[in-house]
Amino acid sequence: KANITSNGEVNIGFSNANWDLLTNGVGPSAVLWQGWALGDFQVDSNDTYLVQCVDTDYTQTFTQSMIWIDDYLLNGNTVTYTFPWYPVVLSSGTHTLRIKVSGGGNSENFACRFAEAKNPYMILEGDDTYPDMVDGKIASPYISLVVLNTDTSNF
Image (cartoon, helix red, strand yellow):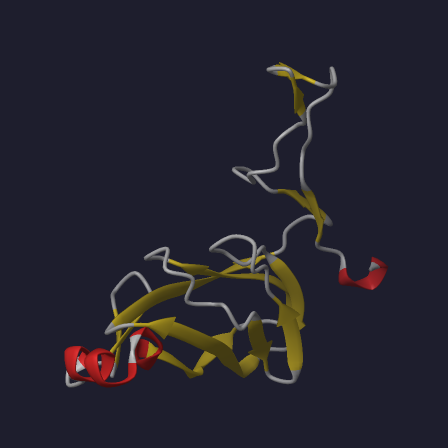
């Protein structure tokens, strides 16, 4: 069963499953599952939008790394618990979001965020790209900023 909170977080839960029985009979792999989360959303105008889906309970819900909006595949990032922001051009109207999810145990949580791309680029604040360290010192006098190209006509 899936529940959606007021802040848009989705909880996929299997409260009726007897996980102890499954684990005792088959082993730890018995609690692993995968499937698709589907949902429709609407946009008011033809525009470029930014989409990000995050694993809100940090249990690697998105190990399948697949998010689709209509027929457009957004690739995921299996190194962290989040997908980066992805620009996608959407026409006004209803669109379908499909997320390949997998997990282990009785529940998993995730949320998807949407924002209008207001500039042709976006600085990704809070991105955990760190400079190289050598012998406890930063190896370069430069810092890094992660910039996302949101201009879909110039990919």
